[in-house]
Each structure stands twice: as structure tokens, then as C-alpha cells.
Image (cartoon, rainbow, N blue to C red; front, top):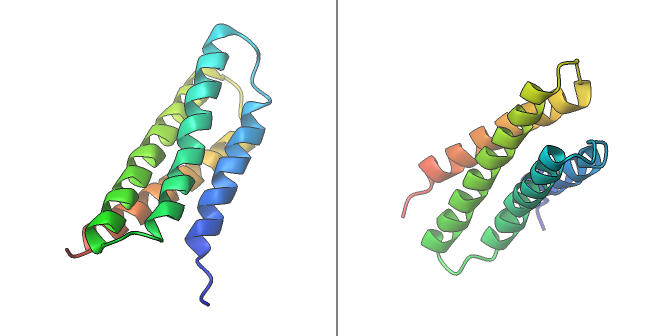
Length: 115
């Protein structure tokens, strides 16, 4: 069986986001961001996982589109954190870079999957 690197990457992206969220302060804004980013960063991997058992090419493409939307949302929340945090944060920058990579990958899959 061929290993699917993207399954691993999406899984670990979600885990790294959850671990990063533990470090945010416990103020109302951070609680909102923690909830939203926690959901979107894990949902992108869960939907990609589901796509692997798609009942058709259209089903596969639809699940990948959902992963793309969740990745875009994750990138948004990471940018919000960056805008609110005035100091340099290498971990946050790495998560932002990973979210952009995943967004590009999912976009390419959606654009290149023929129905």
C-alpha cells in the first residue's frame, strides 16, 4: 500500500495548531480564536481523510474542496493571531507557511481533478 504523505501532513498540521493554541492567553478574543482555529485546523485533515474513501470522483473532489475551505479558514485565524501579536513568533510563522502550502496543494488537487 502506498503511503499518503498528505494524510500525515494534514494530521500533524492539526496537532501542531492545537498545541500552539494551548499557549494563547485565556482572554475572550483568544478563546474565540482557539475554538475557531481548533475546529478548522483539524477539520481539514478529517475531510481529506474522508476523501480517500470517496464513493466517486465527484465525492472525492467535494471532500477536498471542504478541506481547501477549512485550510483557508485556518490560514485566516493564524493571520488574525499574527496581527494581534506584536512580537516575532517562529512557531506561528511556521504554521502560517504550512497552511499556505496545504492551501496550494488542495487548490491544485481541486483544479486538476477531472469529473
